[in-house]
Image 1 (spheres, rainbow, N blue to C red):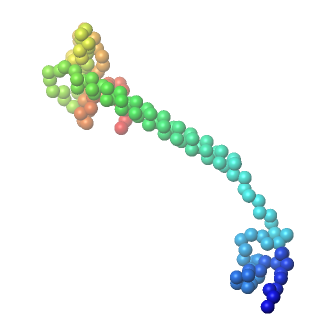
Image 2: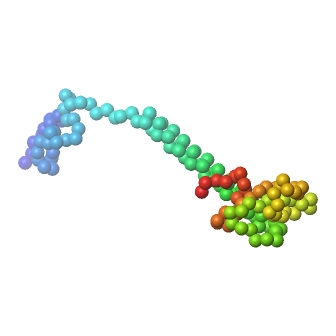
Image 3: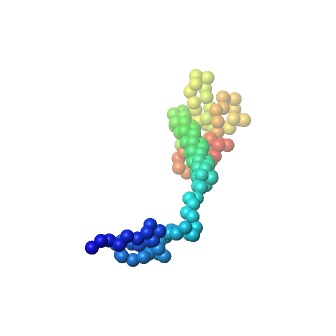
Length: 139
């Protein structure tokens, strides 16, 4: 038996053997609204700018935190390598001095009470980490 030929403008589903133009998610006749793809270029550019700005800000934040951590490490390495003959108390401020020989020593004597070459003042926090006075950061 010969198949019945239908015109191209008729929407007929061969599998279900039904006319299903009304249930298609797109227009099926010349009077239907045209399908126009949305131009997303402006949205993409705005999104790229926002993401780049966010990533750049996060990078700068991490870089600053890393630099602070390195500085803190160097201070602690310097102080723990310095000479001192007392046990530092947590929460107290101590002063780091440099001898003419280049040797560092830690003292309880404030810079205005002596004539030593003052490197910096530090306090020992509860984590046993030396923090330079004036450079405290919020963790």
